[in-house]
View 1 (tube, rainbow, N blue to C red):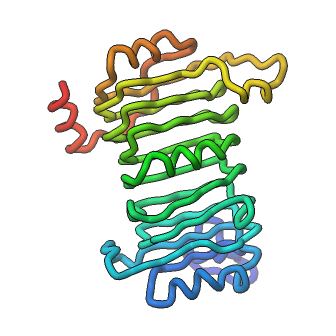
View 2: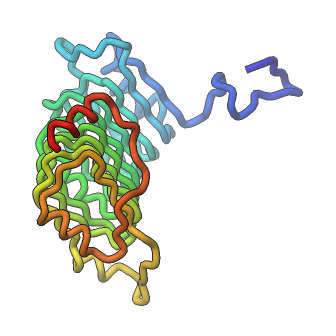
Length: 262
């Protein structure tokens, strides 16, 4: 931190800096009113973060996020007791990045954003259809990262997608991927993978440059995972695949899971 004045402004690393366009809300008794008022109080906000007040019990708290914020580019929701979440190209057409961590499984989520580039989801066990409908619309997606996303089936289709990281996807059984630019596929600690489809041809191929070529490797990380022989064969026979790449730190529970599935 240190001293600052007109002649010595705050350094970029100082946590006291107020950045225009960023709104942070902490869950409290007036949070719904604050959310509903955002289009008027912060019409030019580009980043919205809503955080828990430190209590993770969702019972008795009901929040809804379905507002029009044309300029919003990033949304982060952490430990928020949501019952309804609506994001689409009419309400929030410019969102490129979303972060959802520990949102109630029962939350009615409807995310249809064509400009999404980055998705991060931690601790969620809702219907697979919600995630797949979101991904079907996000055809410009570049990065998908999750931890303990407990869906049984997930499908990706994007010409821009470079990273898929599904860490501790405990219930994942089926994975489908069209991603000609993919550089990393993370399946660390996924104990139930039965089917993998690395799609060789897709309608999105027509949007690639005429002379499109890929000259980089595709790293696949499957440490502490149980992948069927059929699924493993699909990976091994796919061009560019090299087994390895970045690893997540191994937790005690992951280590125990690995021992049980050996």
